[in-house]
Image (cartoon, rainbow, N blue to C red; front, side):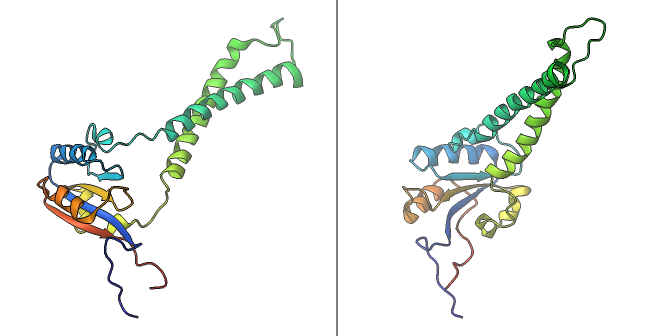
Length: 191
Protein backbone atom coordinates (compact mmCIF):
# COMPACT_ATOMS: atom_id res chain seq x y z
CA UNK A 1 0.00 0.00 0.00
CA UNK A 2 1.44 3.35 -1.05
CA UNK A 3 1.83 6.08 1.53
CA UNK A 4 -0.36 9.12 0.98
CA UNK A 5 1.23 12.53 1.39
CA UNK A 6 -0.89 14.64 3.71
CA UNK A 7 -1.00 18.42 3.76
CA UNK A 8 -3.09 21.01 5.60
CA UNK A 9 -6.06 20.26 3.31
CA UNK A 10 -6.03 16.54 4.14
CA UNK A 11 -8.98 15.18 6.16
CA UNK A 12 -6.44 13.82 8.66
CA UNK A 13 -4.92 17.27 9.25
CA UNK A 14 -5.62 18.43 12.82
CA UNK A 15 -3.86 21.77 13.03
CA UNK A 16 -0.66 23.57 13.90
CA UNK A 17 0.92 23.52 17.34
CA UNK A 18 3.49 25.77 19.01
CA UNK A 19 5.55 24.75 22.02
CA UNK A 20 6.47 27.17 24.81
CA UNK A 21 8.50 26.69 27.99
CA UNK A 22 6.93 29.38 30.17
CA UNK A 23 3.29 29.81 31.27
CA UNK A 24 3.44 33.57 30.68
CA UNK A 25 4.60 32.96 27.11
CA UNK A 26 1.69 30.67 26.26
CA UNK A 27 -0.77 33.08 27.86
CA UNK A 28 0.57 35.99 25.80
CA UNK A 29 0.62 33.82 22.68
CA UNK A 30 -2.97 32.66 23.20
CA UNK A 31 -4.13 36.26 23.56
CA UNK A 32 -2.33 37.31 20.37
CA UNK A 33 -3.63 34.37 18.36
CA UNK A 34 -7.17 35.00 19.59
CA UNK A 35 -6.81 38.73 18.79
CA UNK A 36 -5.74 37.74 15.27
CA UNK A 37 -9.22 36.26 14.81
CA UNK A 38 -8.66 32.54 15.38
CA UNK A 39 -11.40 30.88 17.42
CA UNK A 40 -10.65 27.14 17.30
CA UNK A 41 -7.79 27.01 19.77
CA UNK A 42 -6.73 24.59 22.45
CA UNK A 43 -3.97 24.68 25.03
CA UNK A 44 -2.17 21.81 26.75
CA UNK A 45 -0.19 22.51 29.89
CA UNK A 46 1.48 20.50 32.68
CA UNK A 47 -0.18 22.72 35.31
CA UNK A 48 -3.10 25.16 35.46
CA UNK A 49 -2.36 28.54 33.87
CA UNK A 50 -4.56 31.27 35.32
CA UNK A 51 -6.69 33.06 32.66
CA UNK A 52 -5.63 30.70 29.84
CA UNK A 53 -9.23 29.53 29.40
CA UNK A 54 -10.29 33.15 28.81
CA UNK A 55 -7.36 33.73 26.46
CA UNK A 56 -8.35 30.83 24.17
CA UNK A 57 -12.04 31.76 24.36
CA UNK A 58 -13.27 28.76 26.35
CA UNK A 59 -16.78 29.56 27.56
CA UNK A 60 -18.44 26.15 27.79
CA UNK A 61 -20.88 25.90 30.73
CA UNK A 62 -22.72 22.66 29.94
CA UNK A 63 -21.15 20.74 32.83
CA UNK A 64 -21.99 23.43 35.39
CA UNK A 65 -25.62 23.66 34.27
CA UNK A 66 -25.94 19.87 34.28
CA UNK A 67 -24.66 19.75 37.87
CA UNK A 68 -27.02 22.54 38.97
CA UNK A 69 -30.07 20.88 37.39
CA UNK A 70 -29.11 17.48 38.81
CA UNK A 71 -28.72 19.05 42.27
CA UNK A 72 -32.20 20.57 42.06
CA UNK A 73 -33.58 17.25 40.87
CA UNK A 74 -31.83 15.46 43.75
CA UNK A 75 -33.33 17.86 46.28
CA UNK A 76 -36.80 17.40 44.77
CA UNK A 77 -36.48 13.60 44.74
CA UNK A 78 -35.19 13.44 48.34
CA UNK A 79 -37.81 15.82 49.66
CA UNK A 80 -40.62 14.33 47.55
CA UNK A 81 -39.83 10.77 48.60
CA UNK A 82 -40.03 11.68 52.27
CA UNK A 83 -43.27 13.62 51.78
CA UNK A 84 -44.78 10.65 49.96
CA UNK A 85 -43.67 8.08 52.53
CA UNK A 86 -44.54 10.11 55.66
CA UNK A 87 -47.77 11.69 54.43
CA UNK A 88 -49.32 9.33 51.90
CA UNK A 89 -47.90 5.80 51.82
CA UNK A 90 -47.24 5.06 55.49
CA UNK A 91 -48.28 7.91 57.77
CA UNK A 92 -47.45 7.43 61.44
CA UNK A 93 -48.64 9.69 64.21
CA UNK A 94 -45.78 9.63 66.72
CA UNK A 95 -46.17 11.96 69.66
CA UNK A 96 -48.71 14.15 67.87
CA UNK A 97 -46.25 15.44 65.25
CA UNK A 98 -47.71 16.68 61.96
CA UNK A 99 -47.48 14.34 58.96
CA UNK A 100 -45.65 16.96 56.92
CA UNK A 101 -42.91 18.22 59.22
CA UNK A 102 -40.59 19.69 56.59
CA UNK A 103 -37.57 20.60 58.80
CA UNK A 104 -36.85 16.92 59.40
CA UNK A 105 -36.78 16.32 55.63
CA UNK A 106 -33.94 18.78 54.96
CA UNK A 107 -30.92 16.56 55.85
CA UNK A 108 -31.98 13.73 53.55
CA UNK A 109 -32.95 16.14 50.76
CA UNK A 110 -29.56 17.84 51.13
CA UNK A 111 -27.73 14.51 50.90
CA UNK A 112 -29.73 13.59 47.77
CA UNK A 113 -28.75 16.96 46.30
CA UNK A 114 -25.07 16.16 46.87
CA UNK A 115 -25.45 12.62 45.52
CA UNK A 116 -27.21 13.63 42.30
CA UNK A 117 -24.90 16.61 41.68
CA UNK A 118 -21.77 14.55 42.29
CA UNK A 119 -22.84 11.75 39.96
CA UNK A 120 -23.94 14.28 37.34
CA UNK A 121 -20.56 16.03 37.58
CA UNK A 122 -18.65 12.83 36.88
CA UNK A 123 -20.94 11.66 34.08
CA UNK A 124 -21.29 15.10 32.45
CA UNK A 125 -17.54 15.63 32.51
CA UNK A 126 -17.02 12.32 30.71
CA UNK A 127 -19.86 12.85 28.23
CA UNK A 128 -19.22 16.51 27.31
CA UNK A 129 -15.45 16.01 27.03
CA UNK A 130 -15.89 13.01 24.76
CA UNK A 131 -14.18 10.67 27.19
CA UNK A 132 -12.93 8.04 27.32
CA UNK A 133 -10.87 8.78 24.22
CA UNK A 134 -7.76 6.61 24.16
CA UNK A 135 -6.28 8.39 21.13
CA UNK A 136 -6.39 11.97 19.87
CA UNK A 137 -4.58 13.49 16.88
CA UNK A 138 -2.73 15.89 19.19
CA UNK A 139 -0.80 12.90 20.60
CA UNK A 140 1.00 12.74 17.21
CA UNK A 141 2.53 16.20 17.70
CA UNK A 142 6.31 16.23 18.06
CA UNK A 143 7.48 16.40 21.68
CA UNK A 144 3.87 16.40 22.93
CA UNK A 145 4.82 14.04 25.77
CA UNK A 146 6.37 17.12 27.40
CA UNK A 147 2.87 18.57 27.89
CA UNK A 148 2.68 16.60 31.13
CA UNK A 149 6.17 17.62 32.27
CA UNK A 150 7.70 20.94 31.26
CA UNK A 151 6.24 22.36 28.06
CA UNK A 152 3.15 24.37 27.18
CA UNK A 153 1.43 23.81 23.82
CA UNK A 154 -0.97 26.03 21.88
CA UNK A 155 -2.83 24.48 18.95
CA UNK A 156 -4.70 26.33 16.20
CA UNK A 157 -7.03 23.71 14.78
CA UNK A 158 -7.40 23.22 11.05
CA UNK A 159 -11.19 23.52 11.41
CA UNK A 160 -10.91 27.23 12.23
CA UNK A 161 -12.78 29.27 9.60
CA UNK A 162 -9.80 31.67 9.28
CA UNK A 163 -7.18 28.91 9.07
CA UNK A 164 -4.57 29.54 6.40
CA UNK A 165 -1.50 27.33 6.77
CA UNK A 166 1.07 29.97 5.83
CA UNK A 167 -0.54 32.73 7.93
CA UNK A 168 -0.91 30.55 11.02
CA UNK A 169 2.68 29.36 10.75
CA UNK A 170 3.92 32.95 10.36
CA UNK A 171 1.85 34.10 13.36
CA UNK A 172 2.94 31.25 15.62
CA UNK A 173 6.62 31.65 14.68
CA UNK A 174 6.40 35.37 15.52
CA UNK A 175 5.53 34.46 19.12
CA UNK A 176 9.02 32.98 19.82
CA UNK A 177 8.04 29.37 20.51
CA UNK A 178 10.50 26.52 20.94
CA UNK A 179 9.08 25.02 17.76
CA UNK A 180 6.03 25.09 15.48
CA UNK A 181 4.74 21.83 13.98
CA UNK A 182 1.89 20.49 11.90
CA UNK A 183 -0.32 17.92 13.59
CA UNK A 184 -1.82 15.07 11.62
CA UNK A 185 -4.25 12.46 12.86
CA UNK A 186 -4.50 8.96 11.58
CA UNK A 187 -4.59 8.46 7.85
CA UNK A 188 -8.18 8.41 6.59
CA UNK A 189 -9.49 4.93 5.76
CA UNK A 190 -9.50 3.92 2.13
CA UNK A 191 -6.16 5.57 1.32
